[in-house]
Figure 1 (cartoon, one colour):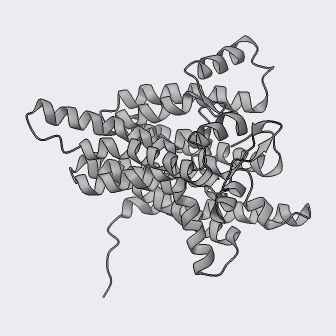
Figure 2: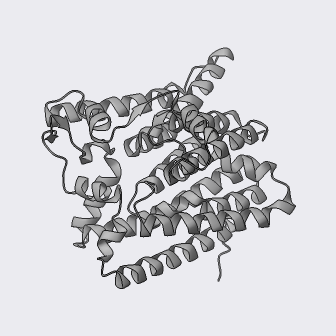
Figure 3: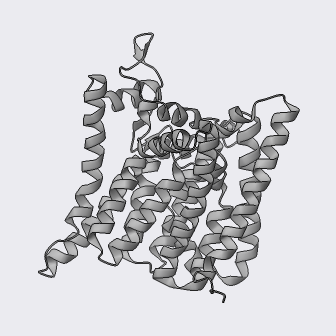
Length: 366
């Protein structure tokens, strides 16, 4: 007796995702062999090594170099590293293997959750298109490294789904998990605030308040934990500002565009990436506003895009555009059918370029 798969709209995206991951892994293995590099060092590039360090435990005090707080794992929210730690010790496998397994599986789950959200609001065809966009998005190269994005995308997409369905307890729990994975989870308070306001205007009990308060409460809880753990109340903020030179700036993206417009040939590869990411983000936000998607998706998509755009020196890199996935759902709704094949081809080409660039050089920080 056979059982029919209940989510056929997810199949094209998941198959494409699996093929891309296998091809990328083969590229990493071949490159590591030819250049006499360890496979672990390639899989754990960039922030991956900090997640793996965090899985072994956070420092009990802030490391100081030259009078300033140095880079350290405290900058990364804890849930993903805790899962790595559990898999590492539970299965008795190297942490880099645990990280690769967890990231790959969580990336597939993220694709399915985002496609499910798209299916819930706009039906099967939009869900199929969205799944393919997630699989081929330039930011999807991150699923071949040890990053927490798959967890965040999964939890936040399900939080939006259950917020729409008025399943308040589940939405609150998933919002906590999303925020414990990434500070971008704070953006989930925006659609929750809209829902609570709508309930209040209708004279109903504001049941969405739990979802609204969950992100700031989770954020503050981590800050308080770091205070107890390190003895420094501002441990996270000092690490971000001094160790990673990261700060909030409403003018950052405007500055990026100004530098690029003044002399398009002069900026570095990273500045080009940020400029084109910002231009793409603005265009996708316009599409999102015209897509007719529910308020929960529109407000989260705009809030996530804005927070990333104001996070210097990170900005709207491809992986943060992916974190604002309602932009992709909006594109799936609005783009005419005749444009889909060229769009997938262009997106896949950009994904290849991003992956190769990230693996063979240090010119662009993902």
